[in-house]
Image: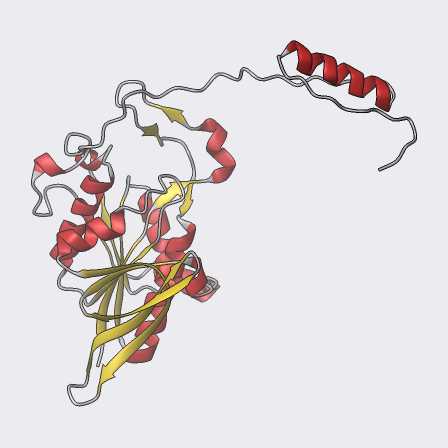
Length: 283
């Protein structure tokens, strides 16, 4: 009884360097060159979910990402956390992809790696925050899909000696919905699901020897009209920095003077208020 599990992750810009991010004026996409990255935080919850299931029923955990060559650093970190193997989809042809092109590329990469019983993702990325990739990925793979999963329980078939279904709770605004899902499935997990484990020194050492496969556009079966910027139906009409038109002003004096100054400014703006001022100091 074992499962073949995949975890999709995304390197995202380090928040400490947000002020250095620029936009390509022609492509209207984020220029990521030179900006340090971190693993999308909730993706670590996705890996933790995969590792816990592997520990429960056995199997393998493969981590995959579509990223520039430095995406290998994020994959090595996930290998250090406990993943068995990793795959990096990297090629200039993949650049500038919207969520649809990204999900298609990831799906084709997963198909190249084999048939998976479970595919985990985080609910959303810290940079795009669209939450679109998980459901699109499930559609490309022809799998069931649940989003914002906060609890998972496997249903083991003792007669068949395998896991064919699972129970999952999907968190909603005022509670949750409980589902039974047949495998294979794509689950987008929330941070409420678990607490990701820490990376140990031993894990870092082992990660250096674990397999990491690199696929370029020539290594996967893709329709080139569906990848990268050209394969992205989402187009940015304009990218600009909004101008700041508001300014602050400080009023000085005692309470009555400040109130009177404020009333004068409000009246000048066409706002008439009738307020009785008092020097009694009451509140």
